[in-house]
Length: 130
Figure 1: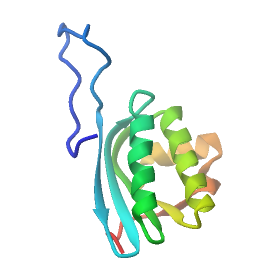
Figure 2: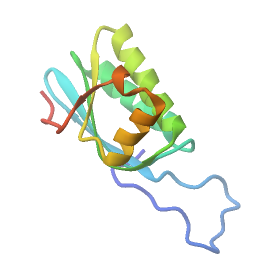
Figure 3: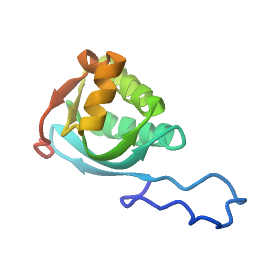
């Protein structure tokens, strides 16, 4: 992952070299107690696993937990939701917390439609790393 999302090739471009480049990016801001991860772009099946690995590493590096700012997320499919659920479970397993912050209406709707909103701690804004 990079700090800036890469764009997929333009229409008519050569895509025979492999999968599309990721269109999601994460910026990690460590703090003394919690780590803040600002995610932007589209979280889909092509990028959810790699993003999950980066977020898990940020969680592991924190003293008490991870805040994930989702204000820049424009799309999230079931793979992205599953990744967040696994990350939340990992946080609980290691005695830390995961807080989803600055949810977009699309993310809020996804959580509500899937009945998973009660599984997450959410906050309206990200406060920065604590």
